[in-house]
Amino acid sequence: MAANSTHHMRVIKVNAAEIASATDALAIEEPLEIRLEYGPEGQRQVQNISVTMRTPGHDAELATGFLFTEGIIKNPEDIASTQHCFIACAENKENVIQVSLAPGVVPHLQNTERNFYTTSSCGVCGKGSIDAIRTVSGFAGEQEDTDTIQAPILYQLPVILRKHQRVFEDTGGLHASALFSTQGELLLLREDVGRHNALDKLIGAALSYKWLPLKQTVLLLSGRASFELLQKAAMAGINIIAAVGAPSSLAVELANEFNITLIGFLRDERFNVYTAAHRVQIPRYEDTY
Image 1: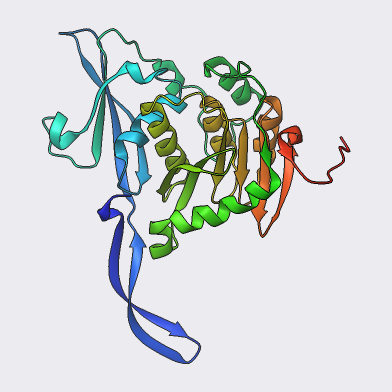
Image 2: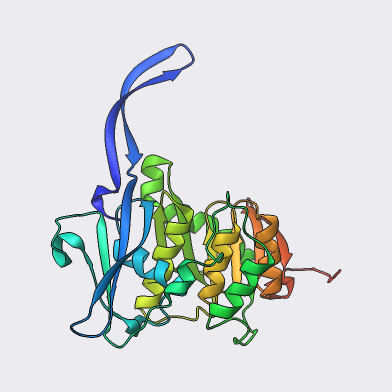
């Protein structure tokens, strides 16, 4: 996470009858405008795709991850460059980033108008949204079902996450998405004030490393598992998702539809398995399904 992801200020701390002046660290929240440049040479055009409130840092990964999980781009080769507008544009705007596609790439801009991308406060989620993911995901239903993880390894993942969540330790105000191997090795970690931004940053990084589809991996979410997070993970081909918090009903429905193992309340050596329990190796477990 970049150095400018936190802001320090003086506060008054009250603890019962004790009052003291202290310095507190805040997670920075600023808008990021994502622009897309595309078209043949000599006929290039720029379109504003999205504005999201995010914590500065890994902006290029956030932009490319968002474009991928929205189905607007398909491959890392689609991207020619990604630069902030104080470099790439005529305007000196630090909170604007422009993704330039290769001249022959046609972006799937119709996907920005479908009901596929939704927030937890949006009422247009449902079966149509789940069907849309199947339409745009290049990995849905195409992977071998060989991913498994042992319960003792799952228990350790939140502990490892907290050890590496540097900005959260400073501020207490960030969500995290972490990618582990099925042996418990931390592969990637991204933080942001927005849980969907943290996951877009992580998937954007994996896209740039050409790791997709993310086989033999486990996605750990620091909070709850919402529909929008499950849709992004499904786009990246992730088969096992664990969350420290609770899943939503629609997240469970999506996980079941795509045969994704969804684990919730992973903390203090306990968890619930909501879907596709066959991937979790639990000692003395008897199949009751």
